[in-house]
Image (cartoon, rainbow, N blue to C red):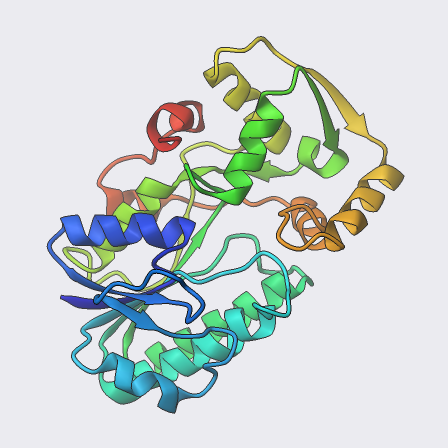
Length: 296
């Protein structure tokens, strides 16, 4: 198929593009107009500003399916979270319905239900809009909600690996208690390939999670073990210092640690991987094997 992949140069998008190409699809990668290197197969688009369907319709000519892999962790003037997560995706999905694009795969996030963060509320709004179009029969939609996605090139993955290398680990309280179900970025890409191939009939919300849940603190400890290091001394960062460090992170654009991250870490990020494993035809990569299989 001819597939428009938004966010094709990002951490997840780059892996998805490679997997789709290997599967024989033709991928047109959506890139920011600020991107310096643009290939003939790239389509210039601006998720900060392209908030109306008419801007998307010309880009959908000849497109069979759309995969949206654009996302930001925090708000910024260059990439406002309301536009990037909600207004632009809803415009894209509406244009897909108008243009007759039959299949849309949208990467959302696990743990957004019940969260009051802007990250969660904007993600939920885009999910609801797409699922509403699907309920009307305007298109076929799959909304992927992954837990923590791990792999080479991911900002959060790099943060986890840096923490795992420390002989003394000083963790915010939520990281020692909240549970996650880490998933390999390659497994996520393989699931998307399946959704655009033999599993076209699978629709709706799909929880993408690894086979076992654990606390974030235990996950960091596992990464350290996978690196061949001895167990670290784990200390809990006092809550006042945790909140102070998050506010300091708010003042530094581009870093993954901020008050939004702290809020999201305070709740479990786990799900039922049954449909995800059906797409893969196997269990996902276990968290104890992520360094060997995804950190490459």
